[in-house]
Image (cartoon, rainbow, N blue to C red; front, side):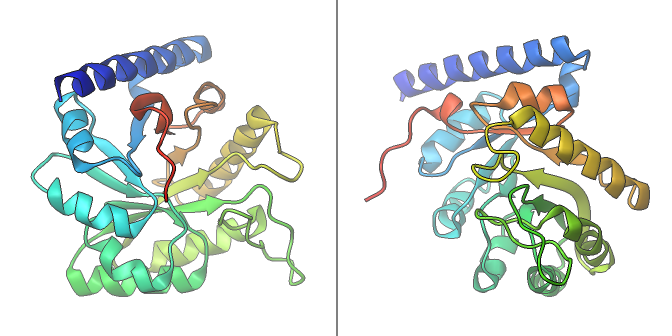
Length: 244
């Protein structure tokens, strides 16, 4: 455990240095960027060490892994983010522990999240996941991307749905740098596009200021563009083991 703590502390320090340097280069304050550590495939023991090292935001993308881990760490001062594609049959479980769902991409999911949030008396923060690889649908609305998310054309409408839904709070936008489409391999341009969409959303919803973008390989580009939150897994926890 001591060796693992030393490893995680060193990795965290390296990531912190990268974020600080990116903020300085962009003329931003370090406190303007929040680190979310993505702990998927790693055990609750790692989450506990991270909490001891000062991490306050952790993320998961699979409910079957996240639910027991969150329960095992319920005594820790952590905010839990759900970042994976979310099926409506998992909503009841996810609302039980997630403070923020970053992968809201369709009306049916908004309805399910709202119903469960009201039932449990919780307020759940929501980010609209933007798919920058999504094709425009036949109706002119935003289609879905390969890894979830709604196309840019669907952001405003979905944002309105979240903002009006009982038990939900519209916090902002999230994206994953696309592997296909016009922004593939162009992370700076992708994140700048997300910031433009954030500006548009904040005109109607001024409190929706959160912009979640950037991971281990491209966090600098996200910070430069203006992201408020970066989601880092491998650079903190190491290379994930293969799932069987």
